[in-house]
Length: 122
Image (tube, rainbow, N blue to C red; front, side):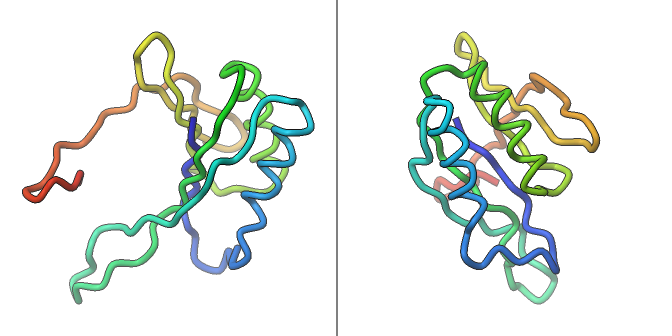
């Protein structure tokens, strides 16, 4: 599983406390833990600069359904922005729960973008 948190201007998480809170929430319920995290760049601006678009948090969980429920509550409690996604798979299908305050849009199909020349996804 993974959580994809959009980076919003003026919402600074320089010390990546969200990842610690997610890890604590999963561990406290014995549902899993955070494996790691990293920032991903968005599309290039007209000037050619690419800003950080989101933070991805990779997870190791023992029960996808229970972890989804816990993550939905935890992510809202820590104040993630709209558009935050919880990525997971069910029977080989890639899905995401997407935060659209005040609710979550559940089990949305994840469409993979084609790769650019050089092997990178768009």
